[in-house]
Structure formats: structure tokens, C-alpha cells
Length: 282
Image (cartoon, rainbow, N blue to C red; front, side):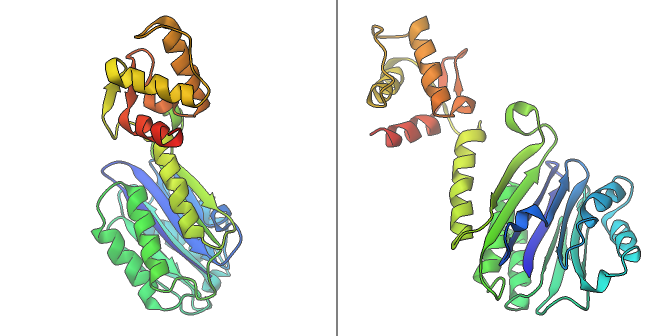
């Protein structure tokens, strides 16, 4: 009773899964990923062992071989649905004959799209075509594909939860994890709208290097200090830059969770962060 898309971008090493369902916390069950290995979505009468066992198989086999081995070992395969993509972008998917209709899948270069208990075949077709034609990083393509599937009818029972997870070696917070994005909406009347809001916040707090950096001097510095005063984080230092001003700004930026968009050593701040703070404290 779920639709999903698993994908890998061999050019960047990104591996991801996006999934939606009229089911509580679908992101806790369907997505399985390992950076540099691949992506798996396991659903319908979900066999959760397909996740860890499939990733082990992908370490030494392609997606089709891994899928064949998983199915061969599972007496309940007729009620399973699974999509697998390996690190080279090879994709394989299975829809058991016992899955609730409409149920089916499509695969292409770098992705496997699948769903069951859907409004119709158009859901999977929309996901596939949207993924193939959408530019940008993997997380954007996955969200666009999932949204297109929902617009085409999605889960015929309705909406409840969505999830989006993308991994890449060393691409996480401070370069100390593989998590590019890991967002879930477990139970909401508008899970797609809520996920979109969370993605905007995630881009703000964690995705750096995607906009201009501004030197903290002159008008930029005074603008930030004025914002700080409006936010109740003013300072008593004179005009211009000083060690005390730098410490005050550092504390303020940390309070707003924008440290990824500020560099005390180079005395610079991302324009996106400055614009966000100006709107937050008008």
C-alpha cells in the first residue's frame, strides 16, 4: 500500500529512496541505503530483511543478481514488492502476483519505481518519467518523482506519511557522516507539504556553498549587527569589527543554528543566511 522510488547517481555517488503511503511512519520500514553500495525499497507485505541482506549482496553483485537471490530465499515472495539499484546505476524491481492492485513497477538507468494499492499505472509512469526528466541533485529528482506520483493518484487509500533519504560518502554534517538528507513525516494530513517545508529548512541549515558569501564588513556587518539588536542579541562594541563583535556574532549565529553558513575565521556569511535572518527579525 505504498509507492516509492529508489535511485543512485553514479556521477556523485548519491544513493536515495523516496516513499509515500497511507501507513504510519513508512520511512521506518521501506528505505534501506548504504553509501557507495546502493539503495533498496522494500514494501507491500514488507520483508524488512530485504534491506540489510540486499545491501550485503550488493557489495559483491549487481542489482538483478541481488534481487534474484533475495526472492529465491523467500517463500513469501509473491506478496512482496522491492526495488533495488546498485552503485553503478543498474536497477531491478519485483512485484509479486499477490500484491494488492494496482501494483507494478518500472526501472530505468539509475532508478527503480514501484507501487501497490495505487490509483493506477499512471502513478508509477509519472514517477519514472519525472525522475528521468528532472535536473538537479538526487534529492530534488526523488522528491519531484514522488510528488508526480501523488499527483497522478498515489496510494488510492489516501495520504499519511512520506520519507526521503539520500546518502553519499562523507557528505553529511561537518563531513563526519554520509547523510545528505534524512527527512520523515510520519503522520500528517498533508505529508507532502510538510516534507517540502522540512526540505527548505534542511537546505538552509545544512547545504552550504550554494550561494554567495559576503564579507562581514561595511554595510553587511552593520546590517547583521542591526538584526542582532532586533533579536535581543545586541552588543555594546563600537562600529566596525573587533574580537568582541566576532564573538557576539558567533554566539548569535549558533543560537540560530546557522553555523554551517558562517565562518568566523574568514569573517563571512552566506547571503541566504543573512536574508533569512533579516526576514526572521524584520
